Image 1 (spheres, rainbow, N blue to C red):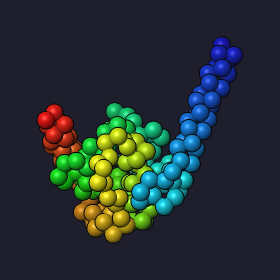
Image 2: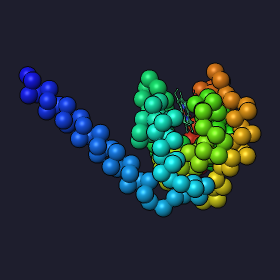
Image 3: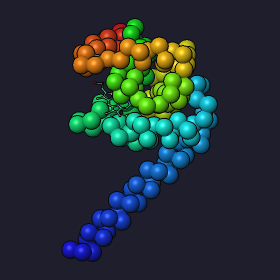
Length: 157
Ligand code: HEC
């Protein structure tokens, strides 16, 4: 019984350390456009976003939808770029405009680089500053569903 619990606890801490090591690898790579410091972006993500989105961006049914493998798809539909920065978790974040722009650019690259449009222009502090003055509230989930429908329709073509 006790041994089993100890084994479980150590398996859990190995898993945590593996995740930390993997993240460390991620942020030591080449910084994507619009990311001045990938390590800072990753730390800001850890402190401000991953509580709901999970370290790997997959979210949970109870907290947030998965960003992994999907978040950059919003960039290919009109209104999607704005939507990403107006969701409450982003717009109302405690981060400065500059740090938030960096986290957004880092997040798009880290969790969904396959869908980043080739002509993607990184978010700037000024753009984020503008967008976050108009945060979405309850309407976020309806807008999200409409945008995803359009993204599905455009990839089906
Ligand atoms: C309190 C939980 C919470 C926190 C903290 C949070 N988010 Fe979210 N996030 C959500 C939820 C829930 C959604 C789905 C849209 C909605 O209903 O708000 C979402 C949606 C998003 C989206 C749009 C993608 C999509 O699939 O809808 C992006 C981008 C995003 N979050 C990034 C971030 C970033 C970056 C941070 C940190 C600065 C952050 N979030 C912090 C809960 C959170």
